[in-house]
Length: 150
Image 1 (spheres, helix red, strand yellow):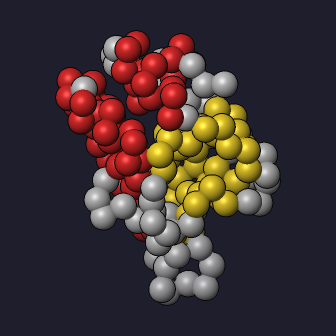
Image 2 (image 1 turned 180 degrees about the horizontal axis):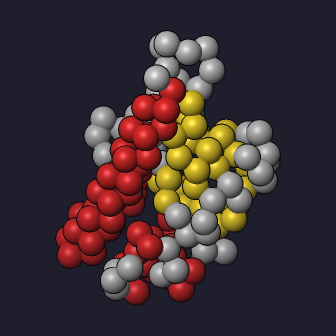
């Protein structure tokens, strides 16, 4: 079971009031994906935000110049966030999330999560600042990984 206390451990929720975390916890679903499975695939409609509890997930992108996908980032530290596309228009995953090992995640339905953030704008602002940090980090990692393929 996901609690407000367990959510407070995620960087995404630093500084978010416990009352808001309690609302978010009610939306959460635990997800288990086996090694070699996908949490989501590039191009799919992004309708969830994911939080890593345990495991290792490679974020991979397809290149038109190569038959195989390229790993642009690894999410392997507990309490990291992936699937930010669920809360950012146009809501399509920009990479595939491939499990390098059995993984335990928390999934939050993006539409309901956004409703909670809209109802709590101060907390929403803090969360969205964290989302921008994640996007910036992934963009930097992607750029470096793609430059290595040239």
